[in-house]
Image (tube, rainbow, N blue to C red; front, side, top):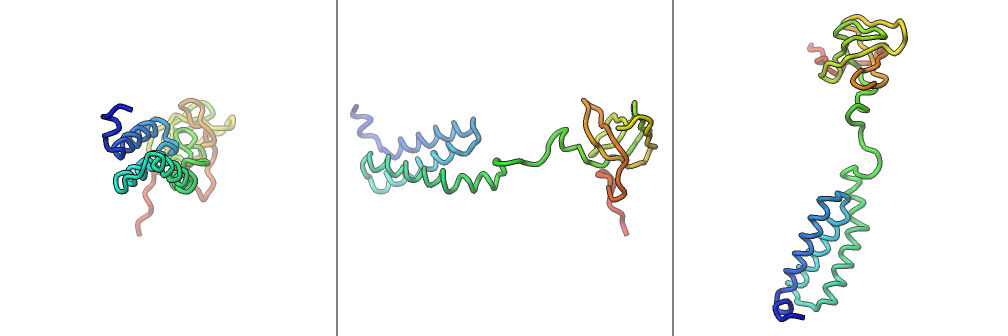
Length: 165
């Protein structure tokens, strides 16, 4: 081993490993490499504070990383909602929303206000029409067109202000 490597503080190498793991974590975002980076930081602290040998440092890194992976990572994933299903986003988030008809809607065309945006719309059923001001429910999105049906009485439009007393 070269003298400059043997004479350099070993805790500094663990900090470098932690930074490398952190960079890899930024590309994967699965929190695994973040746990390894935390393990490397623990090894750096132990190496700097106690000056134990390299074998013990590697063992401390392995144990700390294992504890972080199996104890902290599942809790962090649940908290960040990275495991399982998250909320509906983009087009899928509009399905089931109540919209207000801006221009009459038929089975061919129309215009609704959905979540603050104007959307082209058409009725789900042939021959069905909705007048301006009616409330409708989005049943699906076809391209850039909201396919709508009659809203149930308890539906409230997303865009209306609550009544003031």
